[in-house]
Picture 1 (tube, rainbow, N blue to C red):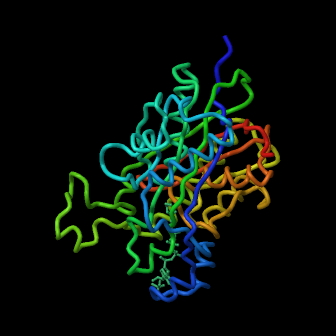
Picture 2 (spheres, rainbow, N blue to C red):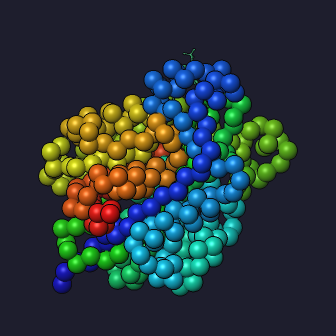
Picture 3 (cartoon, rainbow, N blue to C red):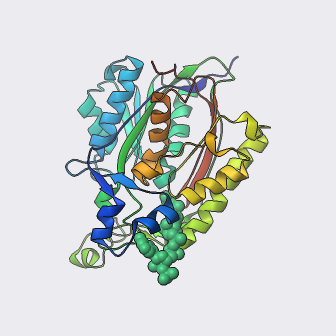
Length: 334
Ligand code: UT7
């Protein structure tokens, strides 16, 4: 029997209009445009002033369905990868389901921080491959501005808000769609990257607010060292075990946390810089949205074409990290 593969048949994204530039940060904290550009590659990010993660997710999904030409009622399952849900419960997936009128869908949120999209993609693919679902929407959306402390300079300059989505459908072609994945987590990374306030460990009190426990904490240097190794290793491993060299891969789609981490990964994979999707300069780190945001922009511009081989790679809080190998299956943008 031929194995059913899960294939991406449509992609879409949504970002808010408002921009926060490096120049804006020069006026807010003790930093410079030069420092931010050279240390991170970021020039500006988008900020959602009014609204929540469900708005980012719903708009990205509607764009995706428009690109595929199907109504929300055809969706079987919605998986929202996010660390900034609108609220603890109900899940953002439920809020999105109602908002877009996906009346036949069930859904849930998945928390894997910057690796949220690959983790959710692989999860969604299982429902397609098992024959349980025919149309699964996987969306990565984060309103990072809601957990960012804009009075300090170390982390505030890194993050932005965005949503990106894909539609997964079955494919009988065994050489296309999602071909392989490697996913990892290591909870010892919690010390270096976390938001400890608000959960059952530290329910919200005046003290947790005063101690800024509802904002992202990151020991940047420690995370940087782990990310450079983790993302490069897992990307090289997925290529090796699928007998692929640099020339066989059309695009690396890396999580956009730091240009230096992306460069190190591409180098390790033997990839020319022209094969790496990079938009960190325009959006910063949008956590679960970075990878589908790249896919959507590159598809829209006609650079990402049907039949191309893609490796997506991520590293983030947890630690969580991983790589997914796929052959791109969506029809080319018109
Ligand atoms: O997406 C989830 C996973 N996250 C990541 O992958 C992020 C990984 N980490 C990073 O990308 C980098 O570590 C950062 C961009 C966060 C920081 O870059 P860095 O090169 O590691 O800088 P650093 O933290 O070692 O700081 C170097 C210096 C320090 O000054 P001193 O101690 O050398 O005098 C900082 O105080 O830069 C200073 N600094 C800044 N200066 C100007 C830190 N932030 C800023 C700033 N503007 N915004």
